[in-house]
View 1 (tube, one colour):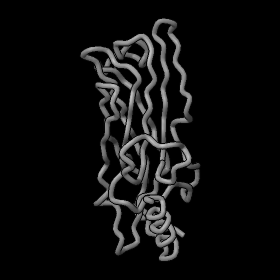
View 2 (tube, rainbow, N blue to C red):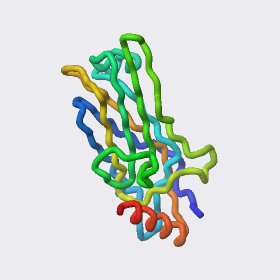
View 3 (cartoon, one colour):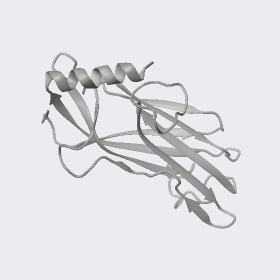
Amino acid sequence: MATKKTSMFTLTERLTLDSTAETFATIDLGSYVDVGDRQALQVHSVDFIFQGTNPQAVGPTGAFGVSSAAVGVQVLDLNRGAMVFSNDRALIASGVLQFDSDAFLSQDSDLYPDNYGKGSDDGRYVVNDQLYIVGRTTAIGANEAINVTIRVNASIVTLGAKDFMAIAIQSTAADN
């Protein structure tokens, strides 16, 4: 199976949504993944933090300049170029926030943070050299933005030859 090379660490990226079009970002994994050494990134959990233009604003309600909207964010290990359905093999984590500042309501309709278990052997293995982030909102106020910070808790592992090959084949098959 997998042999840990590092303790858990956190990778972060901020995605700024300032229009209703899909917005993209990446996390470079080139220095963590090494095909020759069968080295992979083991994702333990992914957290999503939603903030408005002003980081001092408490919570999303009313901080985005609109009375109600939905925000969706996904982390993938392949570049799909758009948001995907939840059964896509490239999907690592996803989060959705819905809010209505008029009624002071908010709700998450997607399970986040995505957590792959409590044990050190639990996790999602990534052998690709990038993580792709895509986000979209249904509404945004003028001169406002929704900032989503993505926190990926991971460690570096060395996989056995058969395990590494199986993950690489699955990732390639998911690309079709």
